[in-house]
Length: 110
Image (cartoon, rainbow, N blue to C red; front, side, top):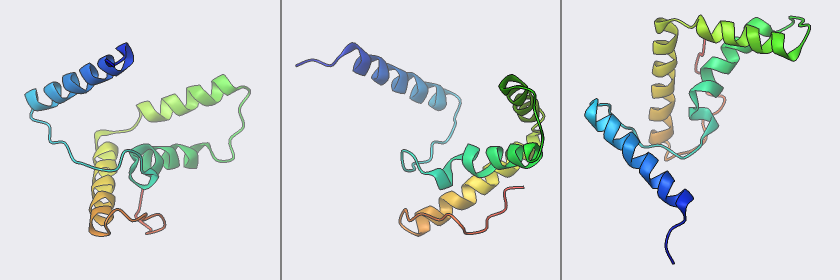
């Protein structure tokens, strides 16, 4: 049996991503396929947005989306650098613990 068109496309995407990363000398770090304690959105971006939206009233779902988009667009380079540093700390802790879940280690996200 041959591979399906979907499998071939997925393989081609992975190869083009690897080629791009290599070409631009971007280091790739190995980590679990999905680990919520290591997802930058879960540990930094969502909490940052939620803290601003907490208690706010909106006329519609579109208004919530617009405000969240505005907040994301206002993230500075320093914010993103902080996010990366927090992610790196969590990655190191996860690696040191053999992949154990680290939620609740009180790593600052703000």
